[in-house]
Length: 265
Image (cartoon, rainbow, N blue to C red):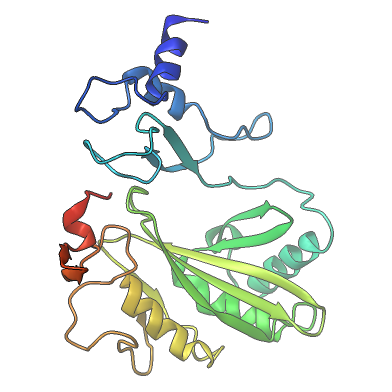
């Protein structure tokens, strides 16, 4: 075993740091973590890394009491898939591309990439065209995704230029199929067109995603907060949002708020 690997292993062992100092990831451990990315098929581009997490629970400094302060985990998104996708996935993508072409659009400028992962189909769409794609997915006789189960927000604060994701889950009652559409936007310009004209049930879901993640759905009929007061500052489900809390008195002892007890990242 090389010295670098020995250092990485030692860094992940409980009790391997100096007394009174929390475990810190060494340079060797960080390098080992950066290499811990799932390998894609030969000839494919490297998987996009959206985050590198250190420790067991994200604690920093001397606050990690788990004994895994030197643990380094690389978080990578699945890359674009190659044809054939398998099953009915190819049919759905082919029909969607055909419909877009008939409308005078270049599918390559509408569909960012197609991902097949864990037997699920995800079509990543450029945000300017999400309404057009939803219209095609709902109305074409060979697609017929009549129902949108809602839109979910996701926040990757370290995914530069693509920090915010909006994920739409579509269900075809006619063909008994389910597909996922995904749109990204930067934190500096968190705007995505609304799909309420095509899927009216998304009215509430888009409001909730705005409330919790701060994605602005342009053209929404009444974009307002759902859980928080209208004058609330910030969006609580973003990963960089402070934990907050109030002091709690328990059996004569005062327990301070979570974000003042430990430093979570």
